[in-house]
Figure 1 (cartoon, one colour):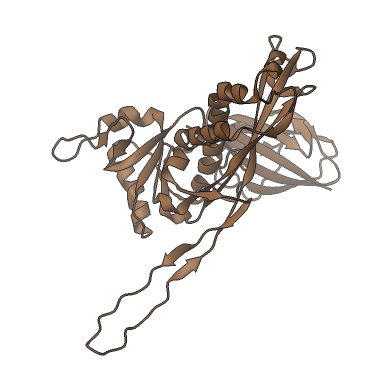
Figure 2 (figure 1 turned 180 degrees about the vertical axis):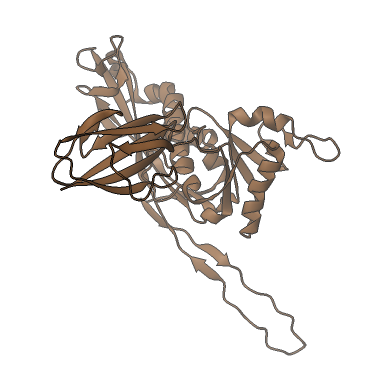
Length: 381
């Protein structure tokens, strides 16, 4: 029986790797909804029909007309996804199969959380596509949630597709429970293995993968969401690393050598491709206000005249002094404003130092996860 101390790198035992991959598939909302492809290499071309073959009425003895179906062959590329789990050195004396049996829940959860956030939102993603960035969007208004979700479905249908599933943040459950059809029957149905909305499965994305400030719900025809998984999982035992994202009791990055610990790095390969973004639509929160209410550069006249909707300006100064006050105020009190003259940070309301020629001032307004940047080109002559 192999022990970790004897095999510091290699493949996770097949039975444990299989269980981890199954748990990833069960835990990932994207995988549960999408078309799943097994991959034996890091790339795989997937045939997808874009236009179906035509059928024709024919008389007795007549030749049957033909029309070719249109196919595309998008390529799935498996990317490496890794998790590092610190453990005590005593684990090295355990059988490899026992260690991964104990850690498989932790490994699977880390994998499917990272994958879902990448596939849905493009968060820390190596993939060329994600659903939210290019799908149709409906902003939340003061109207009812059922009307808003119906509008999301309409976006998909207008593009010629049928909604066959939803992904949503868990926080919308209360809104869904209140939905009723014309006869007073609930539109949202909870089940043991599957929840349904408008008769279609709905997956609630958990474990931090859902980005609450970016979307409430995503609807789509999920056969155009492709997932590819390699069957094997590799591991490596780390003994000297400093884990920057794992802090010890003192708030410092965990040093394995100093703490007399080791870490297990597990790596799987998984691919994702959203073939048709138009087959999806999302219900999104109304963006937070990232506009300015005032913007002045001393007594200089901005061209064009300042407007919150306009983000690019020019102005000139012949002031012999190097110091001219730059002032910018956010329209919303919760937003923050950062002013930079080149690389130099300028506090709003304080004097900036200008060089001869063109100076580029960038004013970045940040409100939550939203931001907008205004620029002013100040030419000093």
